[in-house]
Length: 249
Image (cartoon, rainbow, N blue to C red):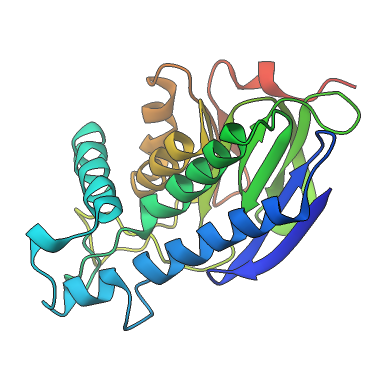
C-alpha cells in the first residue's frame, strides 16, 4: 500500500508492502511529519524555530526534540569542520539542513516499532529503505540527471540504507559554504550520499555539497558511506564502493 501527500512544502511518499497494513498507520506517520513542520519550520511564525529566532523562548524551555536537533547539529558541525551550520546568511537559527533526514528516520523507527519490516519513506527526494519491495527484491532507487530531470543516470539497489541528494538544480543556490558566504557554489550541481540511514546520509550530503568539489573526498573518507557527485560540466565522480550499490540487471 502506498500513499503520497504534499507536506512541509514537498511530496512525502510512504510505501509499506507487509501484509495487513492498516490505513491508520499512514495517518500516524503523516501526522508526525505535520508535527515536525509545525515545530521546525522557518516559515511559520508559530513554530518553535521562529519563536527562538524572535527571542520568545529561553534555552531552558526548548522542547526535547529541539534540544536533540540542536545537539545533533553541533555534533555534525564538529564532524564536518564547520561546513554544516544551523546559522543562515541572515544570522538566524535554521536547523532544516538536518531536520528532514532526522524526521524521515524517526518516521521509519515508528513503523519498525509497529512491526513493519518492508517499506520506504521518501520526502523531497531523500529516501529511507527497509527490507524488500513488493517483488521481494531490494528497493531500486534512481539518481536524476541534474541537467535533464526526467532522466535517471544511476539506479541503486538498497535495503536498509538511506539516500539523500543535495544540489542547486531544483532550488537554486540555497546551500552556502559558511566560510565563503558571498560566493555561490557553482563547481558542482548535485551530490548524492548513501549512508547507514537517512539521517546520516542527509546531514553529510548537505555538508559535503557546501564543500564543493572537495565534498566527494570527504564522503570517501567516511566509513559505511558512498557518494556520487555531478559537476557543472556534467562529469560524475563517485566513491570507491559506489558501484557495488548499483542495480544489476
